[in-house]
Image (cartoon, rainbow, N blue to C red; front, side):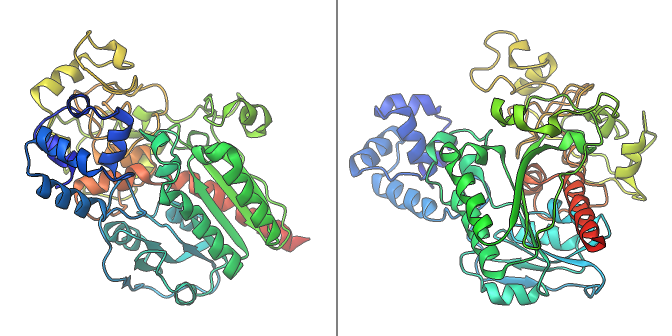
Length: 473
């Protein structure tokens, strides 16, 4: 076991351990996360404090840390041998072919395919359960489980049927705007996956590419990384544009901003999708972006953004630790809930985390933010932790831990529990018939990391419209 796992198992607080071994808090965080290796003296001091044999600690910690590779979260599993999940239906010749390079569970791909103009022909990801989720919802796609550093790019291109569009969201925890300890990871290897994506564009020259990422890319390394990427795409002959889009402006019941870069090498004029909903929201892009972005000047005449409660109000009430597998008689219905249900008859993933007695006490006192709690009820956490979702607004950005109240504002508006995976999927605009593979923990991570399909659909339609206009000229 690594240092952090042993500390958690022994229920030793981080600050307590740091003080006991006289290691700076920032340095200890780096050690626990595997960004730096402890000295022999630090290993010995830590083994004394954790009451484990120093040789066992050194061996266990280094063994676990060496498994860290670019991927989801701080650590992830080795993917093992490259595997392929075959397509179950042939590729339609009349649709635009798309390859998803970092497919995750398939949110970005699903949005493209829901336009009925595009067809996903292949998706690649490091983690098997992500590819299995992707593959289950794209029957014309081959799922590729493997490390993008090692995959034969020529073979991948052939599997994808020489795609017209390359899409993808390179894993981005290294510069996420809401990721804790982001200051520790300026050199995180995952940051360079955006360059792997760029290299494939340079090598294969697809007609279009779409790269989405967190808003943190805008300011990473003082904006130099984004500037460099844009310059390099331009030098390859691509007409490139970028912006920050808020999902709430496109029918998603969540204020979730993503940075998009879209380019084409056919000199086609591209316009960003017109908002469909009015969602007053201060962008994380900063003052400079807010001043220059015309998409922020939304008309008050647009329909109001869909609220979080609008998205989940038809789902059965359940308590902490309970599960519901039938819809029952809904308290309310609306256009959005009808869209999410579709023709699905069996309810899935509507299972609540079993909260401890102490956590239930916190939940019952929860309000707008952590300051709503009685003093000393919690000892740590961001201001948005241990707080309820506002029923009259879109949800805040979901994290990969939205089923736990200590995460970012994820307690049900009225019920005494955190959100269920189904409610999280609704807030991300995944329909109820979307299939997720893996454990509950991993499914929650898949949902929390995904691009909302309705946001992806809006971008896809804007590309299709640009193509059609170009063909008419």
